Length: 110
Image (cartoon, rainbow, N blue to C red):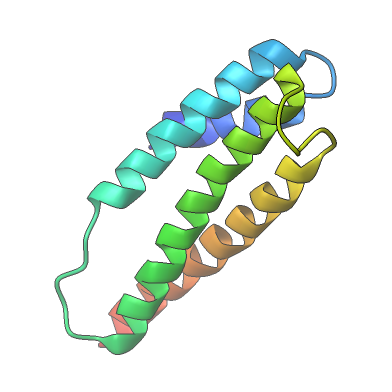
């Protein structure tokens, strides 16, 4: 999961200079990160944590959508020929960042 997160950051940061290698890094990172997020589960009964967990899964899916949009821009196919992937990446980052702080706080409360 950590390696996937690092690859996401490296791929997004270097896209301006090396589109193809950074696309590969970003795609592998988002696949690794999202697959680990989707394998985790919450078995408790707290409604708030379940809601936060769903938001976390939406953030992981946003990373996968960003990888698809980045592929469209890199290989010039489909509708996303500009920087639409940045919007999906931003949504994913905001959701992941919010839930990474809120879930432990809610688990600590209960």
